[in-house]
Amino acid sequence: MEQTTFTPLLHVVSEMAERCDQCGAAAKLQLTLAGGALAFCGHHANALAATIIGNAVRVAVLSGFAWHGELALGTPASTVDGQTGATRGQRVFRNSR
Ligand SMILES: [Zn+2]
Image (cartoon, rainbow, N blue to C red; front, side):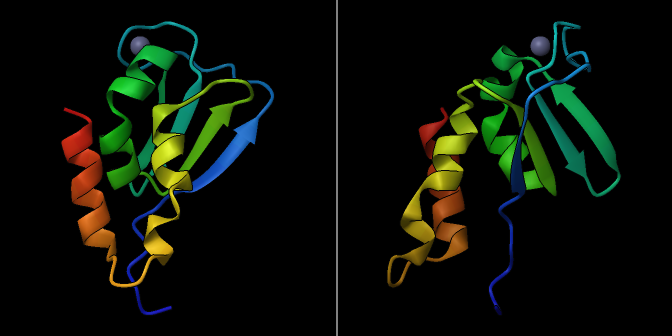
């Protein structure tokens, strides 16, 4: 309960009408930030996965889209003894390079 929740809520949606804010392709992922919302295509959603996880409050993923960030969110590392959110966050960034 005392740990900082840096992990965004993840939702799966069946339809997405948005366009990628980076390239204008059909969006496969939408994220809600503290100050607004963004949408990304599959390419940009994966390329920016670490940034999205670090900044989004909630993330909506189009059904059937295998987002790279979803693997990071699904990792049970946060429940491992001695693992902190900060350590896990750094590892995500390192792996993304
Ligand atoms: Zn894009």
